[in-house]
Amino acid sequence: MKQEQGRTMISVQDVSKTFTLHNQGAAVIPVMEGASLQVAAGECVALVGASGSGKSTLMRMIYGNYLSASGRIMVGDVDVASAEPREILRLRREVLGYVSQFLRVVPRVPTLDVVAEPLLAVGVGPDEARERAADLLGRLNIPERLWGLSPTTFSGGEQQRVNIARGFARQYPAMLLDEPTASLDAANREQVMQLIEEAKARGAAIVGIFHDVEARDRVCDRAVDVTGFTPAKVA
Amino acid sequence: MKDMSDIGTGPLLRVEGLAKFYGARVGCEGVAFDLYPGEVMGIVGESGSGKTTLLNCLAGHLAPDEGQVLFDRAGQLVDTVTMSEPERRMLSRTDWAFVHQHAHEGLRMNVSAGGNVGERLMGLGARHYGTIREQAVDWLGRVEIAEDRVDDRPTAFSGGMRQRLQIARNLVTGPRLVFMDEPTGGLDVSVQARLLDLLRGLVREMGLSAIIVTHDLAVVRLLADRLMVMKSGQVVETGLTDQVLDDPQHEYTQLLVSSVLQV
Image (cartoon, rainbow over all chains, first blue to last red; front, side, top):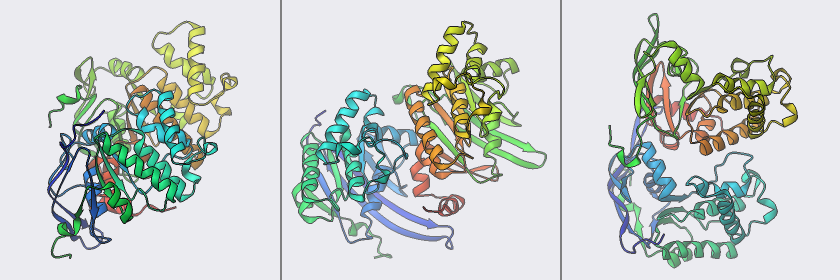
């Protein structure tokens, strides 16, 4: 599933975003304006900027979790900014992976199945999916005795690693990584770095938020400062 | 309407201009949407918002005053509102299923668990006792009811077990569309989680489409692909589930989402 290196995979074009808080006097808060960004296959682009400058907001817009007020967000051949829910769901199943900072799962489902789920969702056989899941959990040092338990009771660091394993279970052509190395020890951080490097090598286009500067410098090809997309009134 | 030909199939259900009035009062009004095979849609809103009225109109339990409920049969969209009663009944025994909030409304309480499941099969003409029992036991297993309970009546079951039995009874005939009215309502939380996990697995394995009415936003976040938010009989917002919950646009949805108690 190697992608052609250099082809634009993610293209954010002149995107804006406002929040309207109806229950607080219908306050309209412009949070982003003129956001543009291109990511090629095999490239990793870091979103940088101070806390509150809109890094996560932009990432959520690319994932279709937040609506865009205007502009286009092309991921492959889908414009996330105007796509129907089922087109976005298909995009998320087949093309666009997302490692968020929070693990959200159905309680009671064993960790191994949580990690295997993205594979099961695209029709990979249960044995093969669980094998891949086991491989990733092993790499991320989640002890095997925990695999049969729900991750809801795990420590924060363990949940984060389960979330990363789940995010990397499928070899997505495009990925969004929100602080994937935060609160990891050196050994696990190194594993995550390698997972990112492997994903790049097979041609994945990656957008990441890394407060860990060393990690950012190692895996990212360039940085985009989102402060430039903050509307003047707010800045 | 966008061209969806790249995805290959047409909608399983198409609803147009659906309305139901109770005298001067609006039950639901102006409801229109397409549901595609394999999609799970949640309908949320508080009590009295019209979501159950809408579900009952869709499932043929209530006659709508306006509009169409078109269902795919062999590639043709057929209006289920104007079809004959026997035709509609046939549909609800074959392609459709309905999971009630209170399991006793969807079960025969004085018939054994196996009989409850077998009855749906017999309704479709199955006559061989051995085969029916075998399928019933298989389905009870899938909903995690032990084989030694197959001859027990649902009156001897807990609330969670009754709900799982109701699901087995509904799914044994391999429906394409399942209507669910508060399927986890009234169950305690640990039982809810188990049922959610079960439903998710079944939806994925069987490629089911489902419409789920609930007031529980945590349930739709985990089960539904898409959401429809209702208030006073009107649809006020629709969209991808996580988008509607995390970036709600309408005043009412914002209120609904911000009113959820955090644990």
